[in-house]
Amino acid sequence: MRYRSRLILSGLALLICLPTCSAQAGAATESKQLSEEHTYPQTVANLDRIRPEKRQLIRARHPGEGQDPAASATYWVPASAGTTQEAAAGWKLDSDAKLDFALGRALFRRTWVTAPASTQAADGLGPLYNARSCVACHPGNGRGTLPEGDGSANALLLRIDIPAQNVLQQEALAALRIANLPDPTYGLQLQEFAIPGHSAEHRLAVSYEEIPLRLGDGSRVNLRKPSYSADALGYGPLHPQARLSPRIAPQLLGLGLLEAIEERDILAREDPADRDGDGISGRANRVWSPLAGMVRVGRFGHKAGTANIDEQTQAAFSIDLGLSVALYPLAAGDCSERQRRCRAAPNGNSEQYQNLEAHRQITDLVSFYLRHLAAPARSRTDAQDSRGGEQLFQQLGCDGCHTPRYRTGTRSAAAANHGVEIAPYTDLLLHDMGDGLADNRPEGAANGREWRTAPLWGIGQAQRANGRGNYLHDGRARTLLEAILWHGGEAAVQRAAVAVLGRDERDRLLAFLESL
Image 1: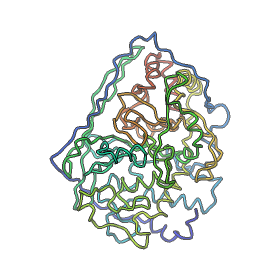
Image 2: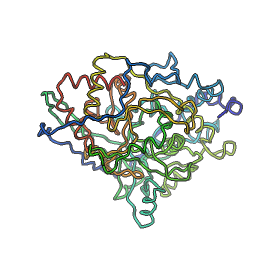
Image 3: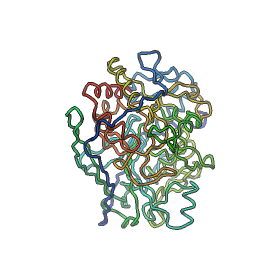
Image 4: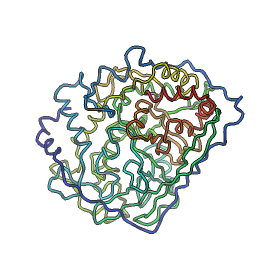
């Protein structure tokens, strides 16, 4: 990709700070309580029956034993990067490509405004939206943060869908031509903000119930059981069968390397029938890829609902920011046919820019930027504790899902990511995580109890960066220990084993995770 000659002038314009427009939230009388039916098992009983399996899987190389894969020579980290580790592929990108990276970063950080505006290259926000920029949800390219008190949450949102209503819809879902059916009024995602003159779709309300848990050594931990509701609905009631799923914005570092993992390496770890009897039955999500025109293995998103970075980027522009893009050219974004004023609002589509608000050059540059973000580098914590924690991680069988190591292939869009040893600690497969984490909302081939194994690289940086972990798909876990104790389903044995560890062993395990 070479955009320097075509975008050098417009690229400079994109860096201009544009005025912001005010956002207003609508109000209505209807509200719907999200029924999550989150349950957490009682204090672990029958401890003598817990038998952590020791598996001979790929062993992650410790930072003290040779080169750290996350610090591969493929990437350089600017001195100003700090904990965010924003980096371009320095040694394998020429000067033109580095400029593309810089332009992509500027677009990622850009604040979009309402149309019409003085520049056609920057307007088209909404009419309904969750954020005005990519970086608003992914500060420092990391995971999103939860709001304090009653504040609005850019990075926490509610996905919405309904079950099939007829045979044709059942067939479309079964064939994976669509991943979800939209709510007839509210679409596939509830937007908390709107441009002036329009009502927002809802106001997200979150409350927590503290669930005390006593561990095997007598320590006490409180888990937060969340309840979600869509209050102040702006366009009438939700469909009576509407299903809501809270999602927090995930970390973006290392995305291009995950995209470069060969599909066959992902599928090789599938075991849906649990033939090896280890209690783990991961399977890949299968989703429709509009770019490929066929069903592909999903790997991005909390349920692996997207096949590649380009599709993930364009979907975010459309549904999160309300901008028309090549794959989703509707200028009104997620506005439904029932939201007539929203559909009829002025938009930023321009013949100068392919009759789109975020034309292909923009989404290509943002995708280029995301593909070349460095993997998170491991921190240099106490080597003995970290190494001991890594051994526990393996002995407990945590690496049965959090696969430590891969070597990337040569088929992905970014050549700089080819042939790289990486340590993401994920198998990118779906796993049943139990009732406690179930959202009861399918996505593609994923059911309402399944989630993609979250990559663990960079997980220790979240709490250091903002003082709060916000772990799991909805950010409910404040610490890594809380996140572990929410595991259920296929990970119930591992969770129970961690719950009965002594304090020293548990500290070593957490030290290892914090080093990633």
